[in-house]
Length: 80
Image (cartoon, rainbow, N blue to C red; front, side):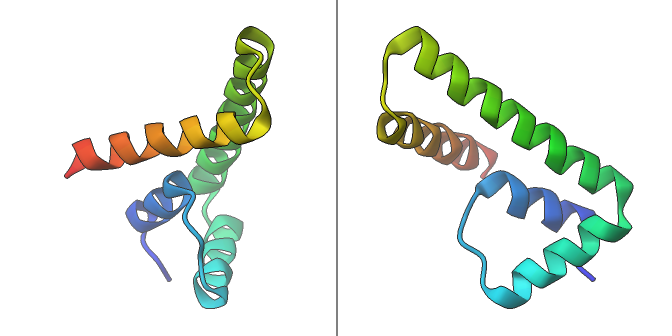
């Protein structure tokens, strides 16, 4: 089973996951209440930011997704 630290990285990155990794991720989330909660909170925050950007900036969905990708890349770059 994947460790919590790896689960957090996978959830936060938003990257494409192969079928095996998706299955491992789902299995871990079913068994670990902490990672499951983290995943739900991250989805709620992502949705809230998406709605906020759309309401405040008149950006379309593709622009919001592009900005989200840039922010995640910058966060990942600073972690290294």
